[in-house]
Amino acid sequence: MGSPKALLDYGGMTAVRRATETLLRGGCARVVVVLGAEAASIRPAVPDQPEVVVVVNEDWPRGRTGSLKAGIRAAPKAPAWVMLPVDHPLVTPEDVRGLIEAWRPGEIPLVRPIHKGRGGHPILLDATLQEELLALNDDEPLRNLLRSYRNRERRTPGSRGTVINVDTPEDYARNRLET
Image (cartoon, rainbow, N blue to C red; front, side, top):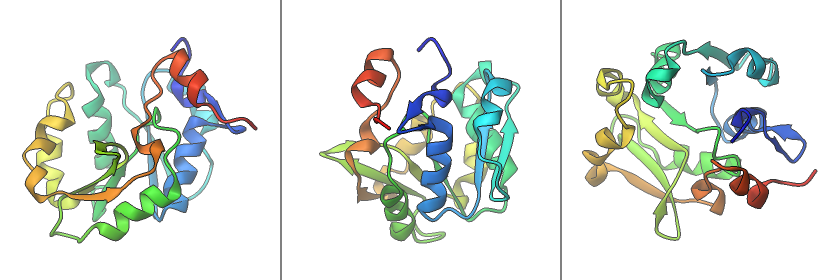
């Protein structure tokens, strides 16, 4: 991308602020922001609110799953976690709310949004998955574990934003919001 994705501007706010506000407005009681590369430059963009906790994953080069595990360790007693990568900036609070409303604690281990037949983000992971999540290698794709729960997952309707992943400057140009 050439610069941290978390600092890209979407409608007058950074991607990290937008993600944080989307999760809070969608019904999450607490948000754990996991920073890795460029943590020092991104930290000032994270909202300074009591519901927002920042964790730095010093081992970020080892893989993305390490950051997921750092977030879980920061909220080990949570009944579930909603995982929203910062490169999905067009997710709406309604998308998050839909996941939370579809979830049944202890019964449904995974809730994911579907838009036009495609799975997207964020995903909700029930706390019953905690041991398995923490046992993953830092470089092991989360999808390896999630495949084993496909027959027990719940799918919810997702907005177009749930399947938009901004990884390149071209993606950003196509999907940025004007202020």
